[in-house]
Length: 292
Image (cartoon, rainbow, N blue to C red; front, top):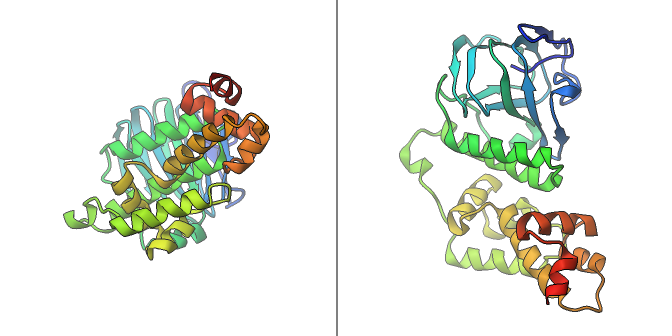
């Protein structure tokens, strides 16, 4: 599935990764941008037709961004499948288990690497691969966001948030097939207000999903699902919006430098604030300040 270090020509190619090494060792550097995060990492790759046998220390989730012809996939001691994959097809390679893949056309995909220790912290009990040949619309949407984030050198926290979203989605839809388990959950009004208050009061500090989940007495995975169901977006996106709004208010106070505004709004640097504000608001902090 993932191209190896050997060169792959325009018509065919083979790759082989012998042992579990660095998190993205099996992906050549010229395949596309990648980023290592606390949870593991993510990569955007475009590969020519080829094949590979690989083994890694991390769980790997690959989501196709465009249709792939003649894709064959096999996990050690887990059977094999062969089909034309649509955009949004999901492939899961468990950690420390050899996987083999072959693809007959160019393969564009987003790849998520997840450390087993981080998966346990999400209360995971299993990761099941969706039925071969099926498309997962939600997974495709997250893969597209990952592609954009990696191409634009996005903040690692943002990428980690997207990784969390796709893993929770796969766990929720793979572990329990009952409709009730898939139904959208929401935070109670009391917990929703507590979380909002905590975000406001600690907006200049580092805030993690674990912090917010603890406030509500929920597991991280349940919290993310309930938060998204309540506010219509994941915790990271909601918090980013709050921080940008707070930064705009501070920018009106002209005795404060933009760097100070950034730190007081929870951004790691002035450039971090500038990048986020330009992307979300369509203007730099200086331009927004001059409008006030």
